[in-house]
Length: 346
Image 1 (cartoon, rainbow, N blue to C red):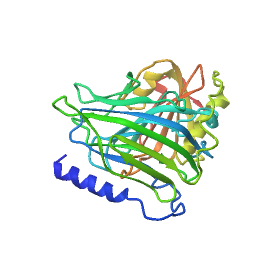
Image 2: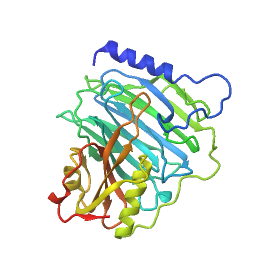
Image 3: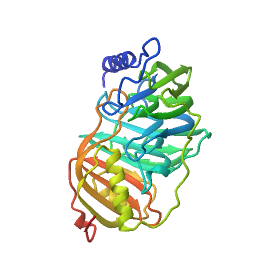
Image 4: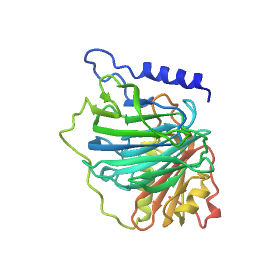
């Protein structure tokens, strides 16, 4: 990407993030596009980037159909094309009982309308944790949480383009309060540089944002963060057929499809499931799983300025022991699950 294109993209983003003066009611439904409260950082060509994230509140009234995040995005090409993201999520990557899930996750949009999302681990409020991306020798990118490796992207990119940190929601009825600090990015010369905001702001009536130096803070306006806070963890259990269908339908609903069709399941392992759906990205565990595939009209998440990913096929990977959803994929190519084993309809 040429430098002039980078400057133009940042300039447009700065204008888009300007907060209108004076109070305002929520003037968007946050469905398409989503609503944001975030900071865009000045960078050059990025070979690694990291930031510390914290939240004491992240909640939506309907986590079975909506989601909210506090996270870091890194563009790997000019908007609205490709990116990597990681952070806290409420909803969006649900289990059989989506009201009970609050997690760390990472995801990517490698292009072509595809979107891959991965569960990392359960999250806790009032805890600072570092998230980071590091470029590998083959131009894929490693994803890290608290310094521990969590996955590798399918996409390749010589450099990251720029970084955004903050909140995203698919509903204005969001409870959210989060902070970030100590954002650093690495130059091609291997020199680490402190990030500084080039623009910041929030959707009118939904988020308020402040930023100074390497730090930012976002707060929801419609539902303040007195209660409820992040939800409790559900009890893990091996999923029944009914649980698998419930989990698949819950995820489909969060991606905008309430009545998916041709829902099928096959027993496999996590890594085999990722290979089967053509994700190409690498995950850090390989437990026994169920892979569910379904048809419909699905819409993923995206950073400010991006086109939300859309697809007619979605897969959901469910841990065979705990019932947790570990991965999802969105795209336009239906896979032949028979290559993995006996396929059953749900």
